[in-house]
Length: 57
Image 1: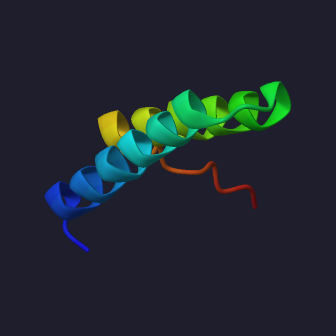
Image 2: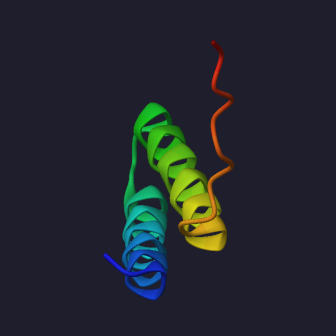
């Protein structure tokens, strides 16, 4: 998956989770969807630019 495609995917998922959070009647469910939405927004903004892991040894 290209960087642009992954950013689009995560942005769409964030929008879906926002809609679910807004339509949820249960506060726990609303909070869960809100957390997922924030995670997807963060992933969409970072894209494939995750920092390299430290290699030990």
